[in-house]
Length: 293
Image (tube, rainbow, N blue to C red; front, side, top):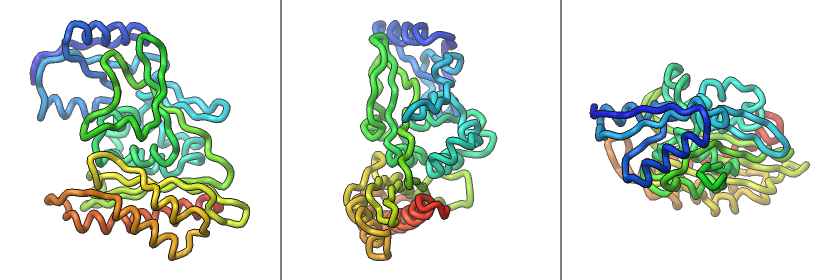
């Protein structure tokens, strides 16, 4: 490993001042939320000197609130804490499922939802789940706060939309409407602790007759970023998620994907399996929205 400076301010304004000072001077700085990606990267693929800015002591980054019409999840709250929150599980079962898939129990004690998003891996489990729940990134800079839809935040492999002098304060999610629920599924070669070969997240809203009136579908690990699939949404809306609608949604997800072939799966396999996962996730989300899940 190279040489590193470390700072852990307790106030947001202090952290932003450090970020801006480094940006103005052209010095490298990286934000530490949980560290489960960053520390591995420091030891393996990128050991160049930099300053590590630990934001875990900043109060705003550790807030979990259920105020008004939205839920706010601070960027440094550990996955373990989020997964154990009963209110969050009830509102977003698919999202909490995706959170529970990040590493081992030990890793989840440090890993964060915000860090998983900022790491911007195409296979990041929580990213597709955030897409379908309409999450908004709350970004802090010296001018104040700005918001960005989560599906605009990841711009490439390992790249996000944060500008110099900015940090992700947290994520804001609208509380689900009545008869609305979500699900997330992935395929991995092993039984646990692996990264997704393909993943799919689905959220559906139903009317009183069980007909889908709104939906979101997103897929992961089959392109350079997670993808929304509007054609899959069109297949689901207006149906009671019958076999024909589910098959059309599966085909839309397969068609929208642009995967690679590697030792973990071929392009053809990934295209096929992401459709299967879409169909299964939609079925689970539908059952949950009906109160049967």
